[in-house]
Length: 420
Ligand SMILES: Cc1cc2nc3c(=O)[nH]c(=O)nc-3n(C[C@H](O)[C@H](O)[C@H](O)COP(=O)(O)OP(=O)(O)OC[C@H]3O[C@@H](n4cnc5c(N)ncnc54)[C@H](O)[C@@H]3O)c2cc1C
Image (cartoon, rainbow, N blue to C red; front, side, top):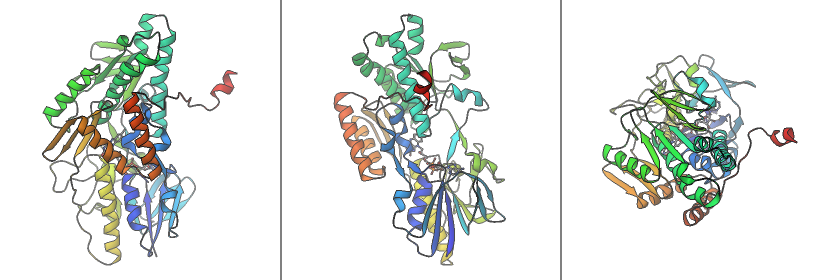
């Protein structure tokens, strides 16, 4: 039996595991610091109170029930010893013959790590529920205050970063403040709500075509979002953000501006690209260690493409499957194959019922694109129960213009105990 270890149960790791688990000659160990696979593309729906956390996550263990050659461990991998062929966790070490590293990326604050406290990013369920808490709490506090300046500050939401996540967050807050607010709060003047999307580059959605990105900017403005391009945030704190000479007072700042390699991959002494992602060989292996494959967001794959592939779920899924295929081929003493990406296009939503979809030369925008976005996301969600509930939840919020998961959950479980 050959020992294969997969570190990371995200899109890349899970797709590799699903292929390898069927091979009885392989003893497969999947290690993730969390006990669940997270469908990150729907995280902002949790942050914006449209979905509940359990609807976009699936326990990794439950996906491999019945496979006696598969072991799932919830552990944090802290190092890889490439000479001893071991991965080290806080609780021990595990030996491998083949290793797939698929640990994704983390937010980058470009050297301003202290900003994270005031401007959380969106990558984990904890961050999504924290963002939901901050946004909903701002509305609750605005309802109570009689000070108009304070109310204005509480109802100003700044999103930094004009990529798909920033656009989706801005659109959702824009709609939430315009429609849900107007219905549910008696003292808040919805006109005071201000949502600002700040992008340092000359336009939002740089990976989409210029024409559609301008259309999205117009759509955002239509739901009350101000789009500030060529605007660099130079400072931020609990009271607001500074953009060049301008100070914007706000109580909620969200970060969607940049990513860097995960801590574990930063520790490996290997060649990297400018974003810190690991440069891989054409077959996705590490050039100096053919038994190690690097997949998903953390890999920098630049063979036969104009620029290194971006961090997208379909790329991670295809790379995970490809790494598994190459391991199987090596076990049969066949040569490994180079990875070829099949472009599945890209999409982003703008508010509750509009989206933008680009697949090759096909470009769609508007409500039809939103339905396509919805169907694709539900199709890729793991688990029948999740798909069913998400569809019902969406249908309801679409028809009623409501957000069902508007719960403010404090992050400290002793919160109410301390107060009483
Ligand atoms: C808010 C948001 C919206 C997005 N929207 C889209 C979209 O609409 N379309 C699209 O195509 N892509 C989207 N993406 C990108 C997509 O989610 C990623 O490309 C994809 O998740 C990458 O998969 P991965 O397997 O490389 O990493 P991940 O899915 O991040 O998985 C990495 C796994 O590794 C685990 N891990 C990390 N470090 C360790 C460690 N030291 N020890 C143990 N386990 C560890 C993590 O817990 C995690 O489970 C979005 C991402 C975000 C954050």
